[in-house]
Length: 216
Image (cartoon, rainbow, N blue to C red; front, side, top):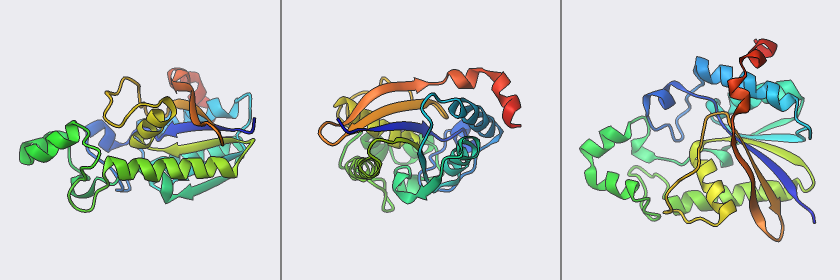
């Protein structure tokens, strides 16, 4: 059966991740920890048993910087696309959930309940809109690369949507899976079955400090 192997990675850490601030479409760069994570990830993927054929990345700096480290290490071509961006959080971008909850408790409650139709004020995306955008983009890229090993560098919300799509879970089901920065996640795409889960949240490479020495 024709298939596309997908290797999915959330960007390395940023200062706003550490502070608990919503980034959304705001363009925040990696911090020192994130850059170290990208180096370790690059070393691990350079040693992949199945070489990466092509890399797609969100065009936001935190994802693109992570992807570039891997492109440099593997020699795979890198294409940036806005289609892999995080959910647009509208006017909530740059703020913490605690601050939003204190100022707008009703809006925060709808967010907490993962209301699929609710969108953050200021032209933010609803979960349904976000899911449609991401699943369409990822499946379209997979269909363009049948038989290849494709890496995608993106964001936590994107990975959450893709995990749900691959496992049949709904948008409001409680999350029990990890969305770690710079961890390796694997899906398979086929024309008949769509997305299926292969492996998730592999972070062995982030625990091996010796890998850092290869890409300092």
